[in-house]
Length: 150
View 1 (cartoon, rainbow, N blue to C red):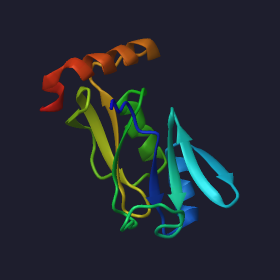
View 2 (cartoon, one colour):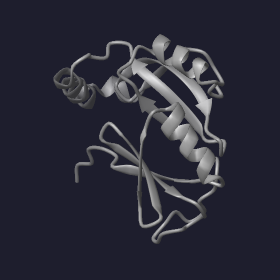
View 3 (tube, rainbow, N blue to C red):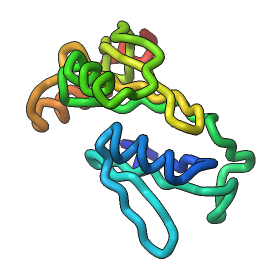
View 4 (cartoon, one colour):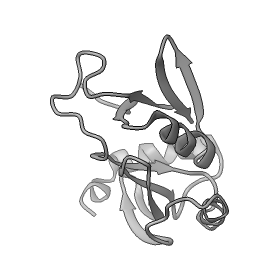
C-alpha cells in the first residue's frame, strides 16, 4: 500500500455562521453547500463541516469542537499573509515563527478558528513558486529520510 495524500478532513462546529465567516471571509476558502451539507474548498483540499458530532456515519468515535490542529500551506509570502490577517482582525496567536514540516523547514503563523481549533498557516523556506517544482519538492521529501525525523 502506498498512501499519497489527504483528500479531506472533517471539522465539527458549534456555530456554523462563525465557522463560515472564518474559513470563507478570513481565510478565503470557497464555501460549498449541497443538501444541508457544508464544505470549504482550497487548492486540492476540502474541509467537510459537521454541525453536531457524528452527523454523518461512519464518523470519528469522539468528534469534538476545537480538537483539531491543522497546518495549511500557502504560496503567498508569509509576511503578506500576516498583514492580510491583521487587516481582517483575525485571532492570531503568534507572529511568524520557524517550524519544520513534512517537506522541510518552513515559516508559520498560528491562529484559532471560532471553535478553538489551532490553524497553522505555513510556507516552506525553499518553496517553489510554480506547481511543477512543488511536485518535485514532494518527490524529494519522499526520498529524504532526514525530512521525516527533523
